[in-house]
Image 1 (tube, rainbow, N blue to C red):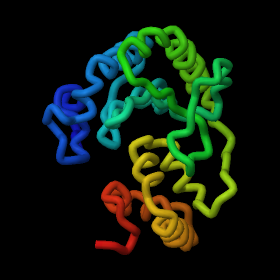
Image 2 (image 1 turned 135 degrees about the horizontal axis):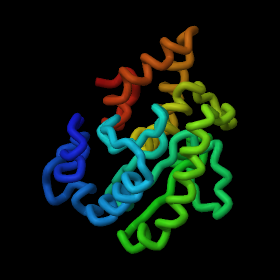
Image 3 (image 1 turned 90 degrees about the vertical axis):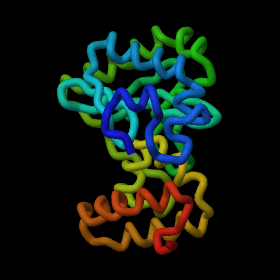
Length: 206
């Protein structure tokens, strides 16, 4: 994955073989991605690269992330459980995500039309960050460990890859990650298994 933020906007995230080619999803949605970047920078957020994606922070807290896929591109709010979402535009990144956190786009024109809304949601999220507020824990009615649910909420690319897994592979991850007694161990297992998930494999497949 990339480590230089500018590489994302010129080459892509580095997660797949389409990196730095015209087929890269970042290249496909370039104008819309740049528009979202401008919204974040104009809001006074600090830009970083995390998980191969642009992540924007305020007072040391993650506020938003940009992600691209072949069918759409997305603006994801971190700690989205705090947002009121009065317009009802937020979607869950995947069926195993407990929190509605993203806005999906398919054109730069859509980003332009929703710029005031994104700005308002960013202002709200920045206010919560300044207050040190965190969202309450939310869970879905399945066997996914909370650490995995949190990881999927935080990384829409990971959520997309996990959602594409077969039910059997998902259950395998639930059991393997959940069998660890300590939360820190469960978190380490998730980080170690990210390449497997992105490859569409079960946790013990090679």
